[in-house]
Length: 217
Image (cartoon, rainbow, N blue to C red; front, top):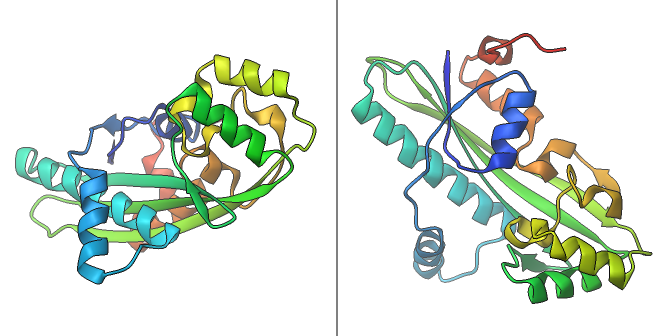
């Protein structure tokens, strides 16, 4: 069965690969800011973090699924979409983009705990059948060490790693040693909750093991 990841995220691709799945990848054509702004304007409110990530995950997966259905009518498999954001004391912390922002984030996160919200959407495509969808949000709390020094923050920021990731940190790479606790599915913090994806595929009558493309250790 084919698997398409509606994302160009190296972390999400790595997660699926390590789980025995070798997906195709496709970049969704979704203006994330415009999508969120339109929904918030229509509903006259600010979306909660779990609503935000689920909205974008569904839109990304739907965009790629529609494109595949139109261009590859013989596609038999699933399309996976995801989105993540980090919340600390009610404040949403997206990608910092600049060293200055990343440094300020880390100075403020030391010794504190935040929540990583991750939206998931899976579309089941089969020749001659209407697309079916399942979606869910996973969350994991992340606690940062309280003894991270300014020198360590500066060195970490200088690597460039935290600039383009939600919350300005990773748990599976250079940022890992500065994190003391994760509560919830650890893969959620990396980019997607594998256990959540398994539940969603099962809702669509797809067994997770049928997606394996290579033996796993």
